[in-house]
Image 1 (cartoon, helix red, strand yellow):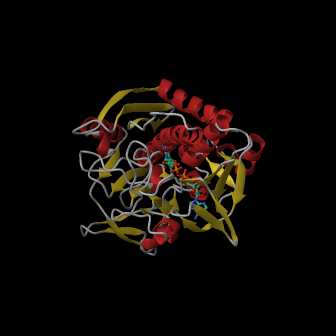
Image 2 (spheres, rainbow, N blue to C red):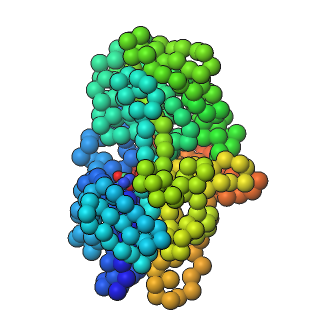
Image 3 (tube, protein in one colour):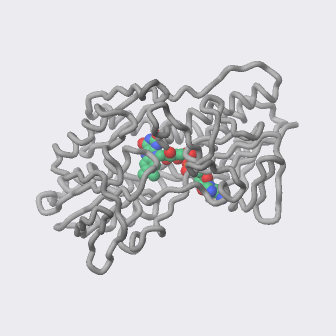
Length: 382
Ligand SMILES: Cc1cc2nc3c(=O)[nH]c(=O)nc-3n(C[C@H](O)[C@H](O)[C@H](O)COP(=O)(O)OP(=O)(O)OC[C@H]3O[C@@H](n4cnc5c(N)ncnc54)[C@H](O)[C@@H]3O)c2cc1C
């Protein structure tokens, strides 16, 4: 009997656990550890922000995985040993034949003075709910969408937030009295996907009269003056601040010495195995350099694909079969643009010398496809 320990029940951990349950004998133990009792489908958070989804619609209890034969341990991982392949929660420790680290990126809004007090963190469920409350009463002034630092997960999400706010305000006939701006600590939207993708996002913002301020790194939020101060010396006022917080590797990963100098876990880019045998890392917690010099973006689509690959590798290894499954860097992404319209991009991020990504003309069908994907997510795993 084998025991597989999966740290994190987010996108990557969930996919790995389900696939292993299907492919391994029932006598093998699959244990998922998570500090949260619910799984949140983050791609739906921008819809929570505009009131088209409620918290209940975008979350499910992780303990429900028990019905599928997966053990769930609800608690903060307090210790992890990649050499002994052990995981501890409180005073209990588990030892595994294989360890999968899918702990995602930790959010660190407290590292920028005034950010928590001054704005709504649209990268959390509670922040998205708070943003919706604020949007409902916003009838004049300025909404600032802030990308505080790079890297951040889902490179499209903050731009979706800005365009969904635009669509919401138009529907409420308040858009003419509310300015919408994006201030970003990056040179261009979705830059790793290439210039064509960046330009199409900037064009979509311009078309909606959303002003875009790239290369602006915020230093502090002056809550009493309601202004943002940037490294460049520029300052901008805001009435409603919707922010993407700084991301960092979870403490437990750096505590056990698994973080590489770039701050994330280094893995084999095809097998996702770390330098420790039978210890894999997938999703946002990894740092995978691309030939173009930037890392693979942090996105659920990659965590999902990597979970599938790692589960296949593990099941082959445990059964002694030869298997050649590898992660190939392919990914795709919807970009919600408000008013029931979305765009879509798809490509190979491992292409050299730079990712080969194609954009598709935006339309209502891509929005419908994202809604269908959301439905599929819940029906497939719950
Ligand atoms: C607003 C928003 C919109 C998005 N939209 C998209 C999209 O349209 N398409 C897309 O591809 N991606 C999207 N993403 C990104 C996507 O959600 C992430 O890239 C994906 O969830 C990463 O999966 P993961 O398994 O690596 O980490 P996560 O899904 O973040 O899971 C990590 C898990 O580890 C747990 N954990 C962390 N530390 C500990 C600890 N010490 N002890 C116990 N448990 C711990 C966490 O509670 C969490 O459940 C979006 C993200 C956001 C915020």
